[in-house]
Image (cartoon, rainbow, N blue to C red; front, side, top):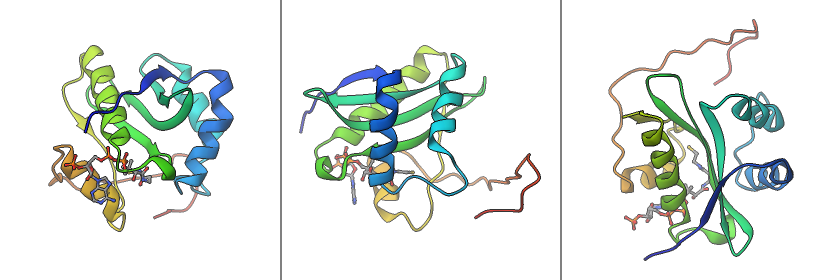
Length: 146
Ligand SMILES: CC(C)(COP(=O)(O)OP(=O)(O)OC[C@H]1O[C@@H](n2cnc3c(N)ncnc32)[C@H](O)[C@@H]1OP(=O)(O)O)[C@@H](O)C(=O)NCCC(=O)NCCS
């Protein structure tokens, strides 16, 4: 199956449709303001939100960035009406290319264990489960979230 998307970095006019897409995909969380997350990802050149369009319509996104050593993706989303057509594979390939161009050699990502479809998706794309344990701490003093 071969699909092609037009890939661009997010622009001002894309913000509301992208937030709406993330909401439709169940990716927003009470403790993450998606508008603030997008603004932060756009603030410096080590991160962005990539958008995939099919015929002008936004169908896929991936927030991609690096910390100077490893690359990370968040908000990987494909419109529920467009799934299982290869859009997810294409937007992830774009994120990988973006990181390679930044000189980053390894991509890491977090998936909730109960998200079976995402676990299967990343395994199909050649990702393997890490043996490392992730530790986390909020830096604004709030109590822990899951
Ligand atoms: C996960 C998601 C991005 C996949 O997007 P998609 O466009 O349907 O994926 P693709 O069509 O590109 O599929 C790529 C591969 O993943 C596999 N895959 C995708 N969804 C799958 C599912 N639900 N179950 C099993 N395998 C799946 C496909 O079979 C395909 O494998 P193949 O090429 O070896 O046949 C999409 O389901 C989504 O947006 N989910 C909700 C948001 C989410 O959970 N994001 C991840 C947060 S960590």
